[in-house]
Length: 348
Image (cartoon, rainbow, N blue to C red; front, side, top):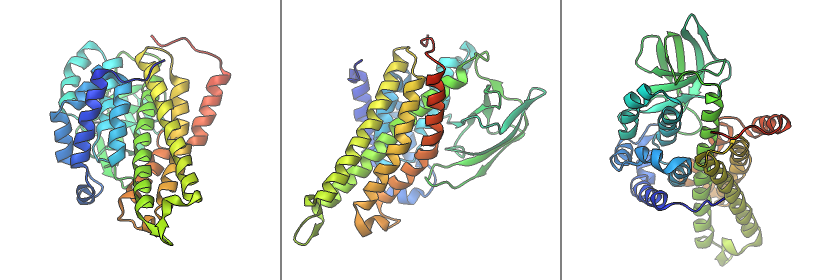
């Protein structure tokens, strides 16, 4: 098992780091409010980064999402890659790949995902009915990957009759929306292969754990910068043992999120079973993630209580990612049931 990035993955990560670092500034994020930074999204697509995910794999996507998380860049990158590009590329028919992938690669199409399946959407007489309380980046989406109550996957165009998107504000500024379906005849993803829902969910959990690793890394970097420059009683805060220990714990938690996400992504790309590893990464992303963003805010002292301070944005993202796709206790229960059921066959 080797998580060393390939030359292509390293190049893509470097390019992403430059673009996010140059354009996802505090001033631009403040101006964007809870919406998407359209210029940043255009720049990422012009650089070919969404389309590159097909070549650099899930591990490459995790590396790119780390860079997004460091800057809390407000673009629908994770959702479009997970619920659009990778879902269609891995589970779609030849016709769906030919028709849908070009727009997802160049950013003219944006995908969102009504995940996980919680029984809110039902299929009746070949049409979809129900409500999904919220989905990230739904306000930007041109298509949504919807999971019905039976875990069937459907591609739904947001502009179709019977589809209503109601703006919803969540903890993190993710252009979220409520999805209302009233007799919509969606397009089934692929040929309804069993296991497609489980595979897409595992991919999503791995990718968003990578995003959480970046959010935590950015929060910790800000905390380190603050504590080494802020003085108290004539010496930097970073010289206090309590500060050092808190930062060290946050660093170890961040590394645990990162390495478990890398392992799950590596196994996916190697065509090995990775559902257990994806759940493990999701658990660390939830439990350790919230510890890290709390520590980042705490280490800023009174400054961390300022809602306009950049570190508070990391806190909001970390808490949103903590619960997205299942909070720690939910994921742990699912992991326990999976382990109790015994080993599964390796992914093909």
